[in-house]
Every structure is written in structure tokens, then in C-alpha cells.
Length: 185
Image (tube, rainbow, N blue to C red; front, side, top):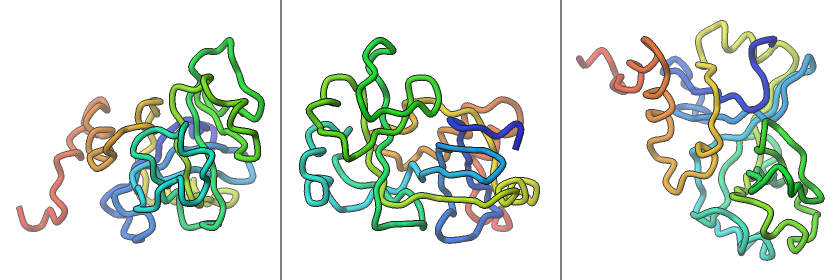
């Protein structure tokens, strides 16, 4: 996984038909020789953060709902945050890539408030064992592209898949206009 690292995005190719990942964009949070872990960025739920983690509802980015992070450990939550400044790193923050990182949800909200530009909470995550993600990339299930912090905190993530592909160089951008069933063309 030498060219796949934390902070990058996995964009599901049309060949990926697993309903857990079809048309998804996954932010990689941790990648090493043992595997990879990430969260799906474009699957908001209807559950308000206030119903599950009341204290965090004042600091999450809009929409103030939980996002489906993936099919693993859906009863748990991960918080992805963007620092407001490199100079003000709060307690409970762990860097993923640049100013983007994870926040420990056991940290008192008062210690976090004001030090973040954005925070999003994900129920569950996506995970791959050693070499599993490499295999899925080789078989054509994922496009691997650079991530941008605003991808995580979009108000409406509906078009994230297309927008991420559209900004890529070369032929990869063409895939953003691909119909659901190309045989109908």
C-alpha cells in the first residue's frame, strides 16, 4: 500500500456493486501493513447528533446528523475534524493528514469548542485487512485520489462522488459523467 495513505480518498468504481460501498467516497484515516480504516463521506443518516451525542451537536458541521461511516462497528462512532489553526491543537485530537484528524469523543466538548473549523461524526467505519484493499484496487473496485478537507464537511454530500471525479486529471474525470448503466447508451 505504498501509494495509498491516510488522507486519500477511495472512490467506488461502477464495478463495485457491494451495497455497502456502491457510489461511495471513503476517506482513509489509517493505512499500514496491517490494513486500512476509513469512513464513508457521502451517506448521511436521518439521526440527529443531538439524539445520540447531545453535547457534540453544538460543534458538528451542518447537517447536524450522524453519517454512516461504514458497515463495521456501527454501534460506535468516530469524529473527523479540521483544525482551525495549526497553533491550537486541542486535547483529544490525533492528526490524520495535515489539519485533518480524529477527535476522541470522550474528550469534554469544552476543550474542543473553538479550535475546529469543522467536525463530523460517523457511526461505524470501513475496514480492510492486510493486502485486502490492495486486492480491491487491483481488481478495479476503487479509484484512489487525493483528498481535500472540504470533502469531509460538505453541507450536501449528494454529488460528492461526481465532484471528486470531475476534479481529477485526465480520463478519470470522464467517469464523473458515466451513466448508471452504460449499456443503455
